[in-house]
Length: 418
Image (cartoon, rainbow, N blue to C red):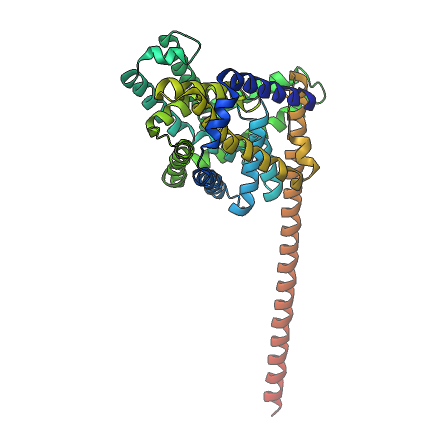
């Protein structure tokens, strides 16, 4: 998928939203927007900015565990770039993660497999609050609401089917996270996965397969080593994980404040439930940022479950998405040129075919190998300088000792002469 295709998909998403809003009534939505309290909207923007800080703080904690020392001030722009790429690529909201790992690798001068491991841990930490909120959501919907309302908000799908889709989605997300953790801590299973990856790449890469296999094994071995070190550090549990729960709370709080701007008080538990449902939809690689799909889910569920008029629900959703999606995407895209053309080349607004994916991985492995050679050369030069300095010090010490011995002999001869 080329840049033109990505722009086309964004355009399709805008059309879907426009049709949806036209169906609800543009005049009614504009009237609702005119009633919004600007101070609450500014407060919601502040909460969103605070969420950016929390995301940077959590990643900073993880990076320090991996011996990657970059300040929060430098991490924050990387977070925004990653979020913006996630928003404009229909890739299960994961297209920006390799990009921010690449930027961190360049900025910190660390191997890509180490920085990518920190990104994986960072994303995995979202799983725990996600699972807890999802369980609460399922119980809350079953106990507190007429399931027929749930059906009316989802094109009259059977309520049992909706719940089944939610549960299956949660299991899929959990299984993926557990698999990534298991492959990182189980060296034997990791080697099996490595052989499978090498076998897959060899289908498209016939040149020097032995060298390729060595590169892949080295890269995955480095990734596993970094993952194991981070997973066994208590700072992940005591510091980074609580921040993950706080991040999800600020996301829900932002939506709550947006509805207050329209003089509507929606229970936090209900916002959490809709937020989880929208997040599940956002993981499906449909359109960039889940445009149309997420908006429709939010408008429909707030109207069906909270009894909010459709026009008001649509107005609040427009404001909320403008802050969480629009503002974030614009900020990230404005920052991207700061990191140079290499990052622009790294960004993939596409889903590559298998051959291109293999070539991309090979190029990445070549880059990793080049970095390791540079580091090794630097260490050898440093070691050579250190050995040279030690030899120089030893020589000076020997000359000084010989001088002292000569002086003592002269003094001894003088004493004998007297």
